[in-house]
Each structure stands twice: as C-alpha cells, then as structure tokens.
Image 1 (cartoon, rainbow, N blue to C red):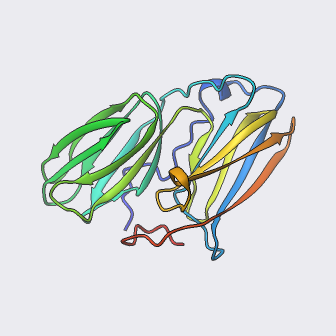
Image 2: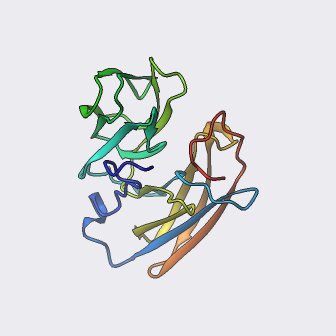
Image 3: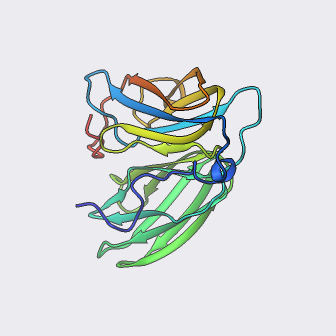
Length: 215
C-alpha cells in the first residue's frame, strides 16, 4: 500500500532556469533498466550543463518522507538543494530517524501517528536514512544541485523538460547500482528542439531486502 502523503517523483526542471524555457531547449527522455531488462524504479536522473554554469534549483513544492508499515516511503527521493523535507509518521509506533551523511547529519524522534518534523537540506549529496528503533528501515535522499533532476517512475522512465541545447552530462544514481559512487554518467549533445532519448542499462546488485524497486 503506497502512502498518499508524498510525491512519488520530484521534478524540479519546471523551476529555476527552466521557469521560462529558452527557445533553444529540448526534452530529455531517459529509460533506466537493469541488465535483466527490468526497469529500475527510483533511479535518480540528473542533467548538468557543460561549458556553462548549471543554475541552482529553486526549492518550491513539498517534499515528504512517510513512515508507514515500518518502512520509509518513498525508498528514494530526489530533493533540490535548499529544500526542506517533512518526515511523517503514520505508524502506531515511535520512530527515530537519523542520518550520518556528510551532506546532512540529523536525528528526529517521532511519536506515533501523524507526528511530523522538517529538516532543511542545504548541501548536495546522498543522505541515507535509518531508524534507530527499526534496523530494517532504510531509504535515501539524493539532494541535487541542478533544476533538471527526477526519480524514475515504476517503469524506470524519466522525462526532463526544457534542457538547454548543447553538451550536457546525464547521471543516473541508485543505491544498488554497481558502480563507483552508485552512479553512471555519459556526455551527450542535446539538440535545439524535440526529444533527446537515452537508455541506461545499469548493473544492479541484489538488495539486502525488497525496497519495491522491481528489478
């Protein structure tokens, strides 16, 4: 059962520099699959410009991590740097959320049922989440420094709109991707209009538990 209280895919490319799309822009359509051919849900796809500065994202919208059925939901959430994330508890038990990430160290004690607190994420990076009470609970925040970033849907699909034409780097990150830093990147040239398509076949390791990623 999925909670209705969080965005399943956070998209920032409608913000920042993409708020007023340039005439010379295109959409980037990315498919992320495992070597088995199955989609990799939750893989974060981000785009950075080459030879020109990538604008910072604007932290508009609501970002939320729910705790339900003794799990974090979603398993992976893409968050723009500078945004706050609300932590909700819909379980009838207490949770103690923490992270020791260099990008953000914090602890939150949440009582049962509907307790919520927010945390500001002001540095880019990967923020693993855990619960001091329930060891099997784990999730990840990818705090991104680009307005063009999104987590893949259940079909491993991401559509990022209004990417400026020219050379860009496309990066795919997932906590179970078998590569340095759990990410793979490629440099491509985006045309001035239309849709630029890319398919990533990601070598995935077997997760220690089933996060619902589907591969």
